[in-house]
Amino acid sequence: MTCAIDVSRVNFRYDEFRIEDVSLQLHVGEQKAVVGQNGSGKTTLFKLIVGLLEPGSGEIFVYDRRVTRDILWEIRQDIGFLFQNPDDQLFAPTVWEDVAFGPTNLGLSQEEVAKRVDWALETVKMSDFIDRPVNEMSHGQAKRVALAGIIAMRPSILILDEPFAGLDFDMVSSMVDIVKELRQEGLSILYTTHNRFFLENWAESVAVMDQGRVIFDGAVSEALSTQSVVDRMGDWAGLRRRMAKARAYG
Ligand SMILES: Nc1ncnc2c1ncn2[C@@H]1O[C@H](COP(=O)(O)OP(=O)(O)O)[C@@H](O)[C@H]1O
Ligand SMILES: [Mg+2]
Image 1 (cartoon, protein in one colour):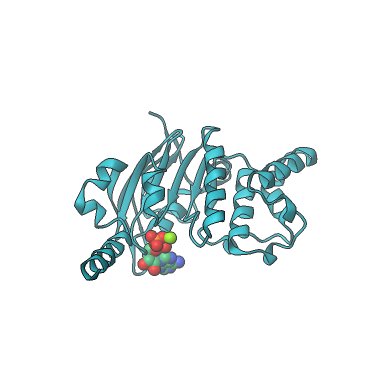
Image 2 (cartoon, helix red, strand yellow):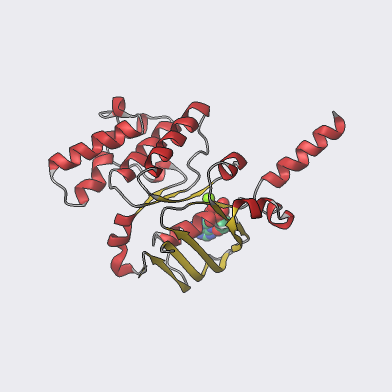
């Protein structure tokens, strides 16, 4: 199978933290979850893939092209990256300008830019906010505008860092609908989640990170039936303990 993303034996270090010998593959058309406790390195890995950070050693390929500084612009046309915090992503004065920024930089005609902005804002159900300042939105609204800015560039790969975190139920379900719709267009998707529902019902495969390493990369059913993997999947371990305790007292 062709790889949309192929991370091969990547190492990276911050002062106090290392990504160690990480390999991971996202196949074309696949939807893959990356899970692991807070601080296990998920966001760092995503930043390495999109070239915001540079590996100390190892290689990252996007459709068989090695990610290097020289081709970052090309890579960013293929990959839409939704930051964990939308405030890191939105910077233009208004929603329209923010969503138009990417397509404008692609060199598209004004008419095509306008068409894409309309389509993207409609897709994320934010058309009513088109002239609003980006700093006057709730967290969930800002997240959807950030996503609109990404899909307006029509990438074939989406990397979503905690797309559902901090959203209320209605926002989560509209985010789910949006991604489902995009999925039908054959996008490859890599996303992090702390929510077991979005692992079991969404992912075709899962990579589990633990202290800067990928300790599992494969089928969700296999991950969930392997206790040593489940134990490292993130904050579920704590949740399970709390539930067991509640049952013991109940
Ligand atoms: N800019 C940075 N400088 C130094 N350390 C960082 C930086 N960003 C993240 N880290 C550290 O790297 C580790 C992994 O962080 P991160 O990749 O954000 O994990 P996750 O997304 O899984 O919660 C954490 O210990 C974090 O404190
Ligand atoms: Mg993170």
